[in-house]
Length: 378
Image (cartoon, rainbow, N blue to C red):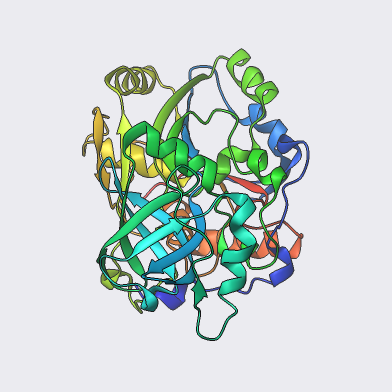
């Protein structure tokens, strides 16, 4: 399909820069297969769930994936920034770096602690991008890496001097929360984002972007859902930076999704199959939970245990196997996520829903409002 079919008008002031408080007071547009839309709030989600339904959440945890520091080459240094996008093994990460052109294979990169950040960032304003090394390297005070490989579009493979849990701890200490570019371009991340950009049920560290539909849930809402007789199930998909990359292809058939690691354990797969066999609906919280379910589902709808990378790309015409309802935020024009919800509800239905959302001042994207979508039957 042509990518321009998924375009729509979105005023810039509809993109939320902060979430509402409390989380479950966000607005929620209910989109049934036919008929009128309903303007509700997330706290009223229980009105649309039934005993025996299964609510599936993505329990990935966002790491401090944005790092600032210096490229060291002899006695010279240049300020650099990195966003980690995919872990390759115990000590290597694939990252988007800028300015990537100034990096060469073998270069040392010294990522600084927060107290040293200002010097590294200010160095990028220098026309030559060069600074004298002001002090000897102190391995105990910095996170060190070397450029292992260079790819396209600023992609760099970094080999760190640490590995495993020690590297994880060092990244958390040196890095910042990686806010989406449409927010980070308008304001800096701060201490409030440490909580705001993490779901209350996050536990599996590895994402570089939040599964944002889950940001609306509070402990109180989860308790109310379980009291309704709806079971909560956890899956994991470590959201990558590919979720923010714009579509470069003019036709969906020419687009390749960035792969992400996903997991469903055997007990969860069995519980979901049993719930469906008894007439319960599977309700995915977020497109990442949906993509995990659909990656693990067989043509007959049976969900198998899963632990692999998935690059599933869902566009109109896709036959959904495992997901009956979807809770998701409002997505950007011509994005792969808007294509997914258009596949779930129908393109014209979603364009109408989004036109309603824009006209009624719903807030869009990561910190925005929610929608509750019912799957359209083929």
